[in-house]
Image (tube, helix red, strand yellow):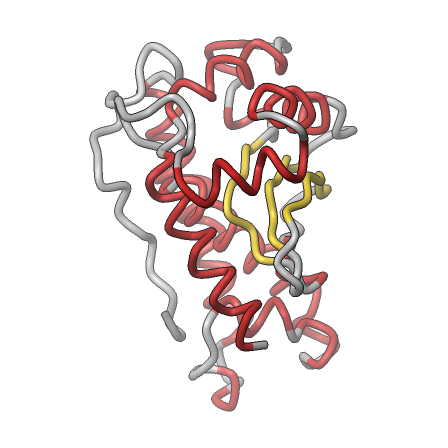
Amino acid sequence: MPYPFELPELGYDYDALEPHVDARTMEIHHSKHHQGYTDKLNDALEGYDDLHGKSIEELLAGLDALPADIRTAVRNNGGGYANHRLFWQIMAPGGDSSPGGDLSAAIDDAFGSFDAFKKKLASTAAGQFGSGWGWLKVSSDGNLKVASTPNQDSPLMAGYTPILGVDVWEHAYYLHYQNRRADYIEAWWEVVNWDVVAEMYETAMRYAATG
């Protein structure tokens, strides 16, 4: 979606992910935090007409080529916009508790088993110092990687395609879990929409195959 960017709809009610993610957190997270990143991204791009046709993926992947005076604002707020847009998409009430098909096989190949993958991502996300994200991402050659990023940095900035992300900023969990980040991550697995993650994986693999 090119400029001006708009706050994406969740596609479900704020209370749809309870008891794992509470309604008040979801409302504040979406309507305040994500709206704030969206507004500030638009503010940063105002007056830069040559950038208005670019998608958020293009802006973040080409961050180093952006004008220096807006680069930090696009990094922080564009990253926040993109990261949260994916976050809402890969969560849903109900659904399968694990992936199937090609994604399941790829996870087994990359990490040994689904349980081993969950343990690695959970420990990586929980161990992120300060605010940030834990990711499952696809490299340009089609390999799965687990990583974390600080603040609102996106894997897109380093040439990866994120297909699963868990927000470990305190605003994502503190009202319900306080300082128990690990408990929040454990509960968050219950609301992952593996169908959407699998679709994102297939899209990333098609991109990797075509270069």
